[in-house]
Image 1 (cartoon, rainbow, N blue to C red):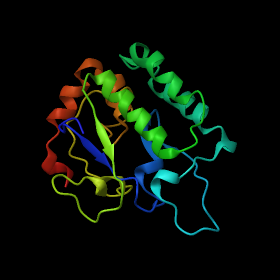
Image 2 (image 1 turned 90 degrees about the horizontal axis):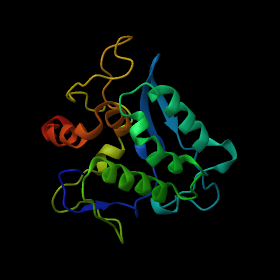
Image 3 (image 1 turned 60 degrees about the vertical axis):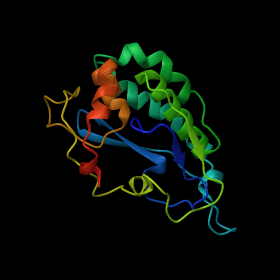
Length: 190
């Protein structure tokens, strides 16, 4: 996304369970911690379109995510610098998952200093002309791991942990996050 002028988000596909659409990974003292947004599943009307998927508000997931992020990154070099800019994203549970994700992405892009514009699909298309990155939302397992290393908060307990949320880079690299993201070799992501 940091290399694109305009990003197109697929919102007309059928929501797929067990994907990265509703989860992210952060590092903590024991290694990796998965944070899931619980989804209200549509049991009677068949498949749900991604743009219509709602989060389940009965679990208090937003405040639990923020507490986990605070615990994991409180000692990161840039956590306090970005904390106030991110806290409101976890103050209440968003109703629609896609809206929540787009709000987070826009905020992250703002914090790393990247101008960001996007559009959303109007209909489902099997393929896009140009760069089609939709497959990366599917990669819960077997994700790329050749990301350049940087010093993580808990690196003294374990080796570098790749495939974490961009929050990991933001809290550890601060203003260098955009350059880090721009330097990731795209051929390693295929």
